[in-house]
Amino acid sequence: MVLTEAMAAGLPVVALDAPGAREVVKDQHNGRLLLDVTAATFSAALHWLTELSPEQVRGLETNALDTAAAFSMPRSADKALPVTHPSNENERCCQNRRKRLG
Image 1: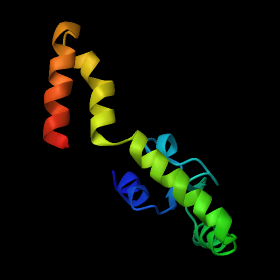
Image 2 (image 1 turned 45 degrees about the vertical axis):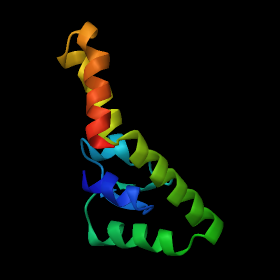
Image 3 (image 1 turned 90 degrees about the vertical axis):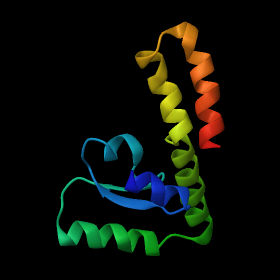
Image 4 (image 1 turned 180 degrees about the vertical axis):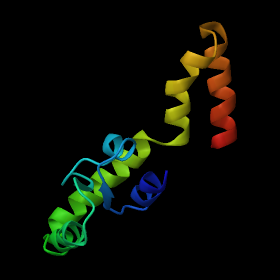
């Protein structure tokens, strides 16, 4: 959740390659996905971000925003709802949830 919250603010993220993070972070697309957790690896990832051109940074920011939108509460609920509710109730539940979530 923290990763997508940061991305919703347009921030590329640096995360350790782990379940959950690897589904959200695409290395060099919307941040950096680290294979090991060492100070040197983390430092190198941050340094990589500082070396990008303004255009490249804007691309990462745009990709981060797009990723956050893909993992938004309404979209995530829409994906989960068919599994948890019968299909004839699904649309009504989705409409009510969207109203509540805005």
